[in-house]
Image 1 (cartoon, rainbow, N blue to C red):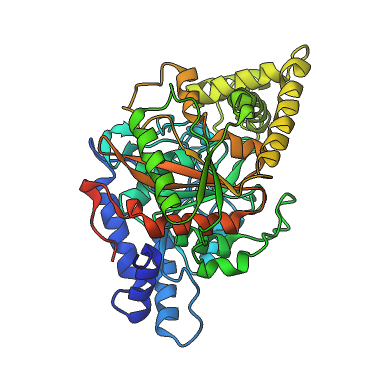
Image 2 (tube, rainbow, N blue to C red):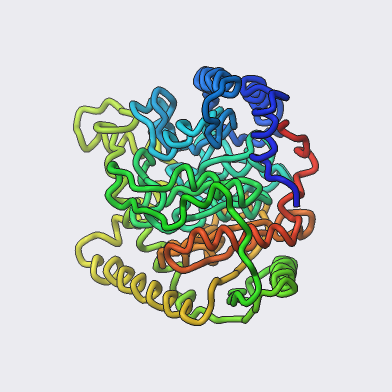
Length: 491
């Protein structure tokens, strides 16, 4: 296999074949040409043109100088709209925070910029990261670059679409129950949810604090590893952050030796899984087996309660975290005589249907008379799931599973049925509940649409998991396939 997208661009920049400023302008031209309008994919919530060009020109000075060349020097990226960047819009995909401007920068963004990255835009997202399709963005649904009549997956919809469409080679999203992995699978790219705490959450709007994690998105696993090497590490601004063993070696990620590695294959409910999705993930297992891995089919009994557990904990934490957006402390204000009336008016006017739904469900779960029956029971269930998954890893090295039961579905198909929409996360919530890293990579096409497969590992096995998926991409070429309408190179 050839070099990754980031490595190719870095070579072009260092050799002087292209400047960071020209590369940045090309990215913004591409966004302007294909992102807006009736058939635009709407991946971008807001451009950061002035900041991007300033950083690109500074990168060019370093590229022409004799000093060290940081790993992301001159590389354009997009960041999800729930990540703070000083002086930039901070809308979170919501009308509630439409006019908010960030007074500081998130740690992960700060570290990427320090490594030379050039943020060119803020990516569209489901409102406050609540959604599995990209359709709950207050400023219009994001469309799939493979077929603009279909969803991208969510909530990191714009981040996935921007990489798939070739706007940028690298993006940041967040993953609570699958929000980088599902859109990555639907858009034919790779995405990583690290072990909880590996990436700082400082400066990222909280949705469900015990589940939220920042996740890098790119086409090649090596690029995910490079991003993690730059962003990982303790952060005094985030008490849940931790050091990742081996992170210093990720800048030069080497494929894992597959010989003797035991991978447990979990296909979920065969009746719910689209036959073509099953066929693509079966083929991925055969490719690994042909290169020395030992594949064993496994059952995960705890998976039967995972989605219900996740939904209870998620909505409860949403209710708590979004209480600050009351039109008084934060968020759009609706002038009314009473404080209660002001809050009610602000939320009813400026929050979307999915945000309201989760707030109401979470408030009910936390209310007197229901707290023990719902929230505490969900906490006990989460503990059982974590122990069960830890025990599973006593006999295997990794777990492989489909990302989604289906390929990307048509826009509007599931918005009227919240339960059917939540079912899209049925295969992605386990790593979040069990505090395990999980990585999604392309596994081929079904009906001309991407299929993703996810690999999971024990807690803090992030480096080995990245090396495993790097090995998978060495023996397959699914990650090199691009949407027919967006097949032009960045360089």
